[in-house]
Length: 128
View 1 (cartoon, rainbow, N blue to C red):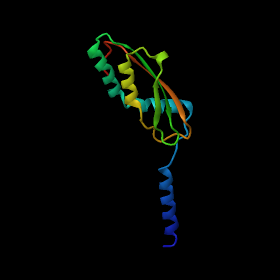
View 2 (cartoon, helix red, strand yellow):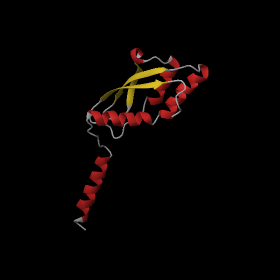
View 3 (cartoon, one colour):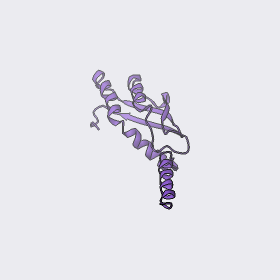
View 4 (cartoon, rainbow, N blue to C red):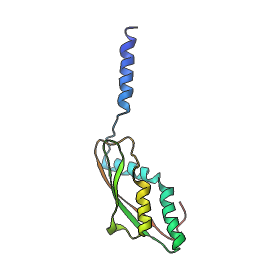
């Protein structure tokens, strides 16, 4: 019984530390993981554009956003439209920002990330 206690303690410590783990991503992994996270909002972002198409059947353009991925939580924050890279309507751009703001990259990385992502919307393109 005395030998079992240290083993159980080590298992509890190991599982507790797993809950607080951080990833160590290289630039490519960070890009790929963040892109996959943003892709989880594909339907919401597509709905942003579909709403614009209902108002203007010829609507098209790009939405470029800059954001920060916090190192302590993996939360996407400070999402802002890059006006120099955005040609879609303000409505589509603000809808995209709302769709991705607050997403969480899990596990968080040990480093803060700065990201830029561009969505291109084309009228008549097949639905995702």
